[in-house]
Image (cartoon, rainbow, N blue to C red):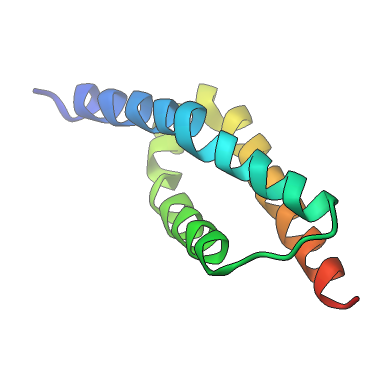
Amino acid sequence: MKESQRNEGVIFALVERIEKQRLPRALSIRKKLEAGGKLDTPDLKFLEQVAKDGKNIKPLLDEFPEWEPLAQKMYSLYLEIIEMHQENSTD
């Protein structure tokens, strides 16, 4: 199998993970923070894992730039979550 075919399979698996796992979890966390809640240990571990994964997908986004908008939207959502957490933690 060619490297580009393998990478295409990887990117589709990542998109599926975003749709079925990451996005619903991130939206749930954001909802909790909007209600004045704070991040707990599982939330922080989730965000830490997302950050690690984000560093690893950069080469794939270079190869498949059509997925860049989705990656940017997810990144913006995670930044929003971090900012909300910081605001809630100073209260």
